[in-house]
Length: 236
Ligand code: ADP
Ligand code: MG
Image (cartoon, rainbow, N blue to C red; front, side, top):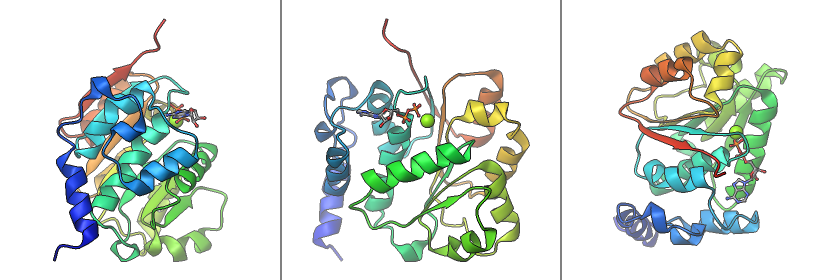
């Protein structure tokens, strides 16, 4: 049945193809949900950074992305906004379980992404969870089945996949490999490959990295399908 919400979602989605990346000046120029726009505004975010401008249309339309941009360029929102919008458009609820998984190399980065998601996603109803080493595994374990968006470090995520029956990825729609170059530098290549091998083949994958090395391209080959390559350099 058509509800006011599903009609509003359809209207937003109809505007995706017409997004003209070259004319986007502010987040208000993008067909984003009122909940996301409100969250962005309250965080003081008005203009997208270059990497955000270049990737958001691709992210919204479900494309796989290999995005390279230096540290501090705003890669976090380049994946958090598509996650929020994609799950919102699918009218994801707590009962749908895990919808998006974000893998990042360190606990500190995972915590920062989690906090950014809490602020920007404040008006959405999704539940989010952190799975990082050093926290009580039992506590994490029991809550896993209620999380729509999980952010974690590679070793801990694989541990949950192997040991926790409540960590159920069958519905997962979006995988983010954040700071992929650092993950590989830290020796997580096999762990990442094992995680990717456990996930549904039909999914969207967003891979972000500060640098494009051969090992990043190897990981991309294993985890992305027909990716759009986006590389943003600082203007000099
Ligand atoms: P990266 O992951 O590329 O290193 P982050 O996503 O951590 O970069 O963002 C770096 C900083 O830029 C953060 O402090 C963040 O709050 C800020 N930032 C991100 N996007 C915007 C934006 N559109 N407008 C203003 N500040 C932003
Ligand atoms: Mg980052």
